[in-house]
Image (cartoon, rainbow, N blue to C red):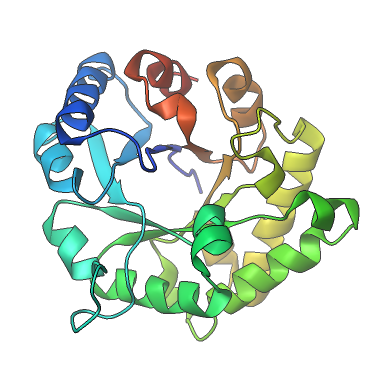
Length: 250
């Protein structure tokens, strides 16, 4: 089964609405001829409807950076999956390491958010990854196995047709460090096998597994050359359209 690569940009807490629209419009012009690659950008929730409108009728889709697990209610400051879907999002990033580190995200809350995303028709991008201490203690696979199995607890294979996994070693996010080719290859093969064990051959074959962690034009070609790497989740390098297009054109 051939998996269409997905290159996703996580804009984190950067860019006002007008700035986000300008960058999205510039990017849309630069990648208008790109084929056989799915492109997603995830601006802030405030900018999401503006950016979604700006990229209508282009080959760019949008995503949210987070959601709450409930559809509605007295949850001040939170945003539901249905709300971001109505704002134009097709994807949602769930369980990013910064959400886990700074905002107390757990595997249990990740699982609830994935269910909420699927209920609303969003494609969940489940982020997983180990810390430097966990890697140096040779606990990488134990950590990843728990994050995947607990994050997808209670799901059956037919529910996960749109799932995307994003492997982001925490020690490589925003540090300039990138896992070497052998490390990435080993982890992505392991994750593919894990999906097969937990669900089915079909789930393992159809699920796109992205790499994230200081992805930039200088290393994307090598990363995308790895058999089980199906795309990239890009942080800082996605904020500049002229740089991001060079990653999209890996």
